[in-house]
Image (cartoon, rainbow, N blue to C red):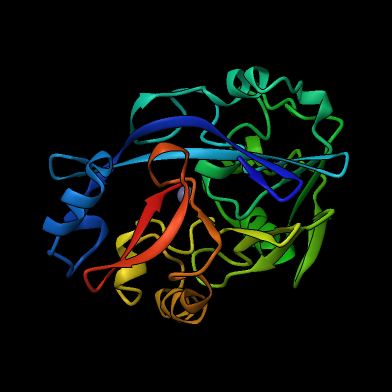
Length: 265
Ligand SMILES: [Zn+2]
């Protein structure tokens, strides 16, 4: 996929089941339309997600956005496929040593898994690891099991606000899902894409922005963020990218019969 002169390529690291939808979205039960719209996201009563990283090549700079779930067997979900990131990167013709910037939208396990390998050695030792300072501070203090392997060994380049990662590629804050949660805007040659990371982890949240997902750190902030940014996406000429959506997660947000839906591009 090309956005102006910027290349944007999805790299699927893993696919698996995260749990019962009714537990993950308490109080929400109108799943029927979403089963029809996004069959890949359902496994019976459970939520099936992809965990997709993105390779961005812009003006001689190579950026990897998020590093997936990481080595198999370290996260308590029900995987269907794992350990896809490094083979996908190789298939794209990029060696780990050629990544200039590893940008982490936030520091949940499914976004930082290949920061380091199973032994805790950095997978991208030549890269600048970039993340929001609030997320780094929060993660370093937390007792989540992935932190010693994937966060502790990294010397982060800590950012905030809006920060250019490469020509036409800018990280920006999307508050709510995790402290310092960020997205990425790509603007090049009059074309646009927005990587929303986990600001709307299930496309139902584009139509029902105030629905609550249990892993959102601050549900009110999340809802506020979605309500604020949706006008920028809906029926606009912009690619909307989420690594947990089907088929690589690159698509558009459009209105169909009164419902806001995400359609793969
Ligand atoms: Zn996630």
